[in-house]
Image 1 (spheres, rainbow, N blue to C red):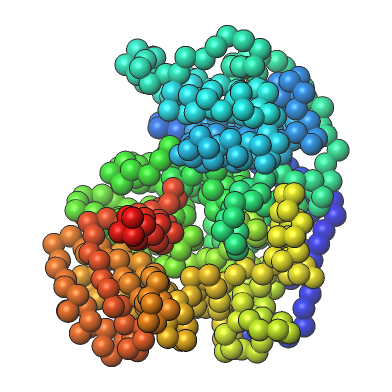
Image 2 (image 1 turned 30 degrees about the horizontal axis):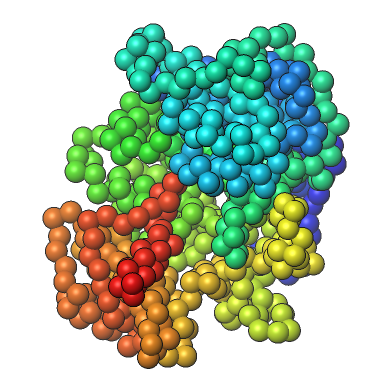
Length: 568
């Protein structure tokens, strides 16, 4: 097994690095599916997947993966093949993800909420050969309508009833018959049962971990245009190892992971699925986020690890019957995807007794690049320290680009074994984002003298107001200090006089009240006049992405539509 280790003299984060984590630890270079093989060997009899009460062991899932891999190879899937997963969180996702890798193919993740146009575009761009989905009309019917206009050759259809516990598996085809898709019996459709009807003997492909792409993960990247980040086997294996090193107090073979974030998103794919496998943890798998179901699941199934986004932790903190649930089993939590307000962190830790830390990364970095220590100093507002083998540099925003000293504001850049190979079929975008092996994130930040990184904002989200840079995150953090504020998003709107002006969208906490005048008075000593929101819109809810991140993009699209209507 080859190994890659980085050594950099005088690292600024050495002074405060967690004592139980070695930044210089060797990061193995290996095929990603080795994670599962290693887990099956070490934890074969341990429970692996718990889906709505139906449990299976590592050995059982491993055997099913081998049979699915053999079935895929019999279909012609091998090195160079790209297989789409159009699935919510179910055991099928985990099985098919690793089966594609074992067959030699590349996984292409699809969001089940995609519109048909988005599905067709991604199938065409990625050159997807086959897709895996459920026998649910809400999913399959979308694929059926785009098959003819794309190069999609096969659809593997997985019966939902087969992964449900008794008696749900028996009742589902009867009670939910209207929700089931009508799937043609032809050569273009393969049932999952038929796919795995073999002895599990597949031909192990000759994978080059550093070159072969394990996952083609679509992202807006730093420009907002969807493109496929090529994450190699080595990238994703490394990030699973790095995350395990960082979770130094996790107990291999003993943990239970709550998997509610969607696995088709890179954060959950690495931190909920792959990290669990590396640790031999049981994954308590939920198909989607439903607050009451999450509360009941924590109360009854006693998960110990719970990665999520800030809006999920916020929702739990504000649950009307919070005291009715025992959340004390939760030990370690990693927040990602969006800034974690300090009051959310502190309230959740009080409510559960857990350690909740904020991490940071991008799809292009597999995704985790930095994190606050599980055992060490957590600095308010910081995304933490670089993971083992990872170097963070703050680079000037003007030319020539140069690495800046501590305390100076610039673009956050990442070096490390988890940094992507590049963008699929987009060499010019790759050249703009990967410069001399350094991933330019598009985020503005600073690093303090202890090596802690603080994100100021996205370069593209900065508001240019009367010639001054206004950072939405800074304004949001000030607004969150008001006790009546549950959620907020700040954005820049076009302004004929100033260029842009600041607007805040706010959801007030249940039972609280707040007016724009009261908010302005509260913020008077916390924000400069140029940063003060000129417009405030109070809402009962704020738009969110599939993983629960507050969506500034959706709000700006609404504003643009309003202006278009007014102008028409």
